[in-house]
Image (cartoon, rainbow, N blue to C red):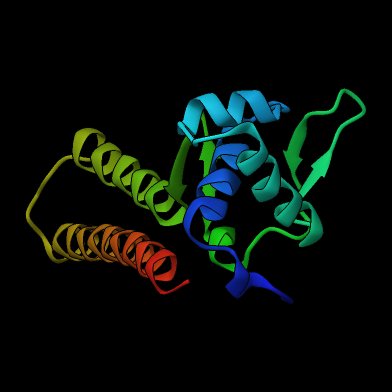
Length: 146
């Protein structure tokens, strides 16, 4: 994607603010949420993101994220209620539910099948959670290198 290395520092913060808001957000709201020094500085960061086509303007003069041009780094995250959640957490939660259901509703006999199911699901859940942590680390490292 062209220009993704240009998004760092306060511009990155503005981008995440727009992304996490969920609803269209104005420059004044961004300015107050991030505590930037001036409205014109906030508008400069917004203009940079508009230029990179990472956000779009609405007819009301507010801004939303452009899902088509979303940064490659953020494609493995879900924005839910202002939180950035790695997709791997969802997979780990799903498998944890399967494992809990299996151990709750299936009579435990301690046989080979029970041990294998438990081992595979525990390994899978721990792998998904490990990958989720790595995603957070890569996101913060990407922000620092900008």
